[in-house]
Length: 303
Image (cartoon, rainbow, N blue to C red; front, side):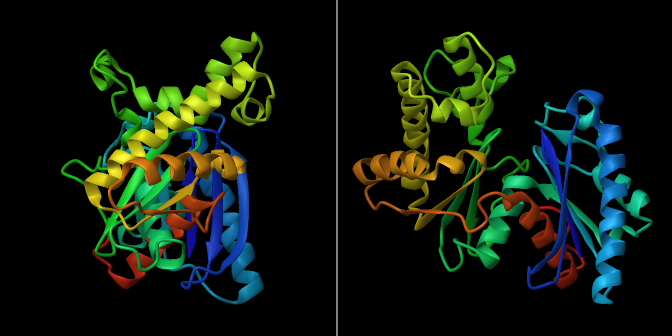
């Protein structure tokens, strides 16, 4: 099977066995400014080549393709995914089926964070935990909620989109086109605020590494703000376990310490807070997990 993770900055592609064993991977730059069409076209070309190589090396075949994207993936469009021009107009499953020359029953698509939670529940750090939360902290922020072994979708597929949570009474949030928590505490948000503070362009990794007391305070405040919202979510769900993944987990000790401290102080029955098993390729593993779901249940489409 083949999985594709369409991200705001990179596209990850992998082939794997149905038990999740990875066989081959490849990464491409999204080139977001060039738009959605070229990103999907290059991803399909690269995935087809990776599948061909895997088939030659293993003698197997590719029965299904799973793909994930930020936002709410509908049959004819993608909502809440503004980072790549034109992405909102994609009929992703149909476009991929055409690109691979596959039937609709061989392609499945879904939200990246929710699919990653499915992978963690099946193969990783959330296995056996109920309820459980997969917190993704990277370019964006999201939480996927696992109840009874299933990932909660919500009435509109938007369950767990905590990047849109209000930080205070003054926030208008989505009504004004903003994602308040994400803009404050995500990798992109920290990079933007760090650049403003330092007067030069920096990325999130540089912000975390900077020893300037002002920058350290900026990161600590953002992590504590995030931890407040995660603690509230854990209290609401009475969550057993919270696993954390995403690009900011390159600074895992700092991120986990903030989350554990707030959960331990504030949640009546504190969840266990652990690193996800799939720290840097969670969404790709999620795409592969969707493909497994499709093989097990042909009616499965998106999480």
